[in-house]
Amino acid sequence: MKREARNFCSAHPRASPLRGLRANLLLADLCSHGKSFASLRFCTPGQPGRNYDQGQIAPPGAGSGGQWVRHRFPDEWQAIRQARNRKQVILVVGTDADTLTVDARRRSLLEECAARGVSPPLQDDPAVLMVVPKRNIETWFAYLRGQDADEDNLYPRYPTESECKSDVAVLDEMCRSGRLRRPLPPSLGMACGEYRKIG
Image 1 (cartoon, rainbow, N blue to C red):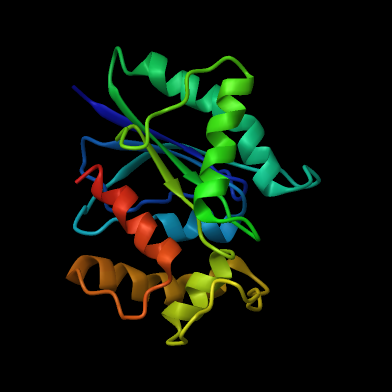
Image 2: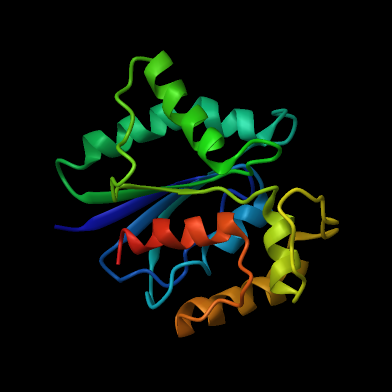
């Protein structure tokens, strides 16, 4: 059976995250902003040649990217469940935890499903990966630049998305080698666990 993944992101609609998936595995991303979306493509260790079916990013003027993702998630998840009858599909969700815990941000997505009458995915369901940087994706970038990143601090944003390329290249190498520098931001460790669900 062909595996397909759909991306739900709040950034560049033509980005191709999760570069490196198996050739027969397609991904779909749903993310809260462009840098998160760009980073996802490097986060899956040992999976060369991944294919992305589509990506969705919060449009300009949509307000909070996290709210946009939460609102869109039930519809995207329901579409994934329906498509499972024909092919294997994975939904990759990227959104910052901000001042919430990672578990609280994830729970907000599941609660939105319940509020809309959609059965939420189980935590170990390999059809959905939740990538939730805390405090935000800039925390991970600070770590990748060699800092001991604190998830309660705010780190400066890059003026343009292209400036995070060197950081995600570091993450790509860490993932491929299976050796992530310690101390590791807990939210990044949790994201690695999400990707291990798809092998």
